[in-house]
Every structure is written in structure tokens, then in C-alpha cells.
Length: 411
Image 1 (cartoon, one colour):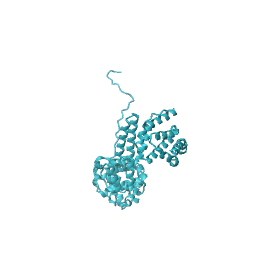
Image 2 (cartoon, rainbow, N blue to C red):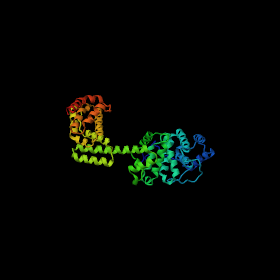
Image 3 (cartoon, helix red, strand yellow):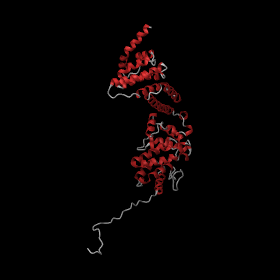
Image 4 (cartoon, rainbow, N blue to C red):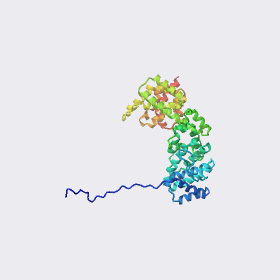
């Protein structure tokens, strides 16, 4: 090869990289086409649905524009409720009366469209989120329409619509502080309960992951249990008030149980623990029966159980009862609460096979420490209503009861 010749790469092609050339976006023309269908059909949703299904419009690209037309009658400016330029149709959700009878047909119409084009559920979700984020820009009557529509979408179980994504946008501090969010969810819950049970509402709240966050819908200065109860009681949602009280109690009881378990495990001072628990119960207004159950569970949770040695487990449990019996006695000052304690111990021993034979010894130990009165033990023995393992436990306790009765006769 001559020194003047330049080397080449034989057989190699140099390919030019192709660019993805997208068609120009034109949501305005798409919106005009949908508006025209509405106008030609005079707002008849049955006929509009047929025309939409027969059209070759690009719903995958302009799905959100479609739902803006359904919601408001035309396109809206981003971040506002102001209309964009272009023709509008007067048969939208926000142009009808604020009643389920008028809004339900729109929900059923959307349901038909989404069944044919499931991919549009994401577009509906995005538009609903934008509408809810702009709640304060709407008049009260329009917020009511949005609440009714939102409730009906879940009543009709629009396929694939995630409640957690819809309700989560309402928890922004800027929206909550103005109070409009609280009014919206109140109307939404009330409307949902027209055709659904309270259990259905709770299931919806759980799917939306807000069943433990309802108080966060209140402005900060009103974020109290009392304000919650007053608001939803006036709104005719008393079951929600009771449910929230129960949830609050559950959280407080869980915190109490954790505190007690730690204190018992660390062998803290008995008197200080009792005073601290009483103060916590007073502040949280915890029901006495729940406190009794929680103290017992904490007592057992603090035990370092042996994996295999059953007798060792029995000894550990009995020692725990004898050591901390005074703690139990501080919260069983009536016969009714003592009976609640026996039922709690009965259920606990029934559900833990390694403690089935321990029930009589626990009762005897608590009697010796004056935690359980003789009358309470005899009442449970003769008339106790908890069926869990009752026959076995009665047989096990019979010698002790016989001893009590004989001592009573001697006196």
C-alpha cells in the first residue's frame, strides 16, 4: 500500500440517527369537535356517547381535553377556572343543577366512554385532581356539584379510578386552611351515603388511605376532637363521629400499651407508673374497660417468653401477675371492671395454648392481692357469659371456688 493512500473501513455503513417527529398538538381543534357533537345532539348523552365511540378523534392524546369539555363545557386555562377561547357547550356538569338526579347521567356517560377506552381513566383522574385543587376558585354551588360528582364516581365504581389519588390532593395545607375542603368532603360523604352503607364509606376511606387522617381536613385552629364531633354531628354524619372517637381511642390505647410495656420491662417504680397511667387516661378520656384490657396485654407483652419450655412460660406469667398485680388493682375498682379483667384473662389464656392450665392460678393470685373480689369470682363461675374455653376454665377453677364457698360457710 502506498504511503499516500488513506486507510478505509471496508464494508461499514454510517447510519444517520432518525428523529422522532411528533404530530403537532392541537387540543383546541379537538375540544371544538367534542363541543360540536354536544351541540348537534342537543346535550343528549346517549347520542353523544354513540357519536364519540364512532369518531376517530385521538382520545389517547387529548383525553384530558375531553373531560374538561364534559366538566366545564370547554377548555379551561391551566391553574384556574377561566375558559379558554373557543366554542363551548351548555350541557356540562358545572352547568346542570346541583342534584344527583342531574349529575348521575354524566357519570354514567363517562362510564360508557371509559369502558370502551380504559386508558382514559388516567385523564379523568388528572382533570378531577385539577378541579379539586381549584376548589376555592369555585362558588359554593359549583363545589357542591363537584362533591356530588366525586361521590357518584365511587358509588358507580368507575373502573380503575384510585380514591387515594383523588382525595390526597385535598390535604394540601393551603386548601385546608381556607375551610373549603372540609365543606367539600362533608358534601361528598353525605352524598356517598345516599346509596351506600357506612361500612362502604369506611372501606372507601381505607382505600383512599385517609381513614386515620380525617382530622387533617380541618383548619389547624379547629383540629380537635370536639370540633370534629360538632361539625359532622350537625352534618348528620353521627356514625362518622363515633368511628373517629373509636379510632382516636385505639391510637391512645396503643400508645398507652407501648408505654406500659416499656415501663414494666424496665422494672420501673410501681407508684410512678400507676400515676402516669392515670394521668394519661384522664387526659385522653379513655374508657375504663379498655384501660383494664390494655394493662393486662402490656403485662403479658413485657414477658420474655421461652420458646419451648411450657412450664417455664407458666412460671414467668405467674411471676409477672404477682409482681404487677397492684397495677391491675389500680384500675379494677368496681365489680364490673373486675369481671372485665376475668373475661380478658379468659380470652388471653384461651387463645394461647401454653397458658390454658394457668387460668386458675392467675385468678387465685389476683384474689390473694385483693385485685379480684370473692363475689366477682363466684359470679363469673356461676353466670359468666364469655364462652371461650369456659367449660375447661370452670373445671380448673372449681377447687378454688369450693374453697371460697366453704370459707364463706365457716364465717
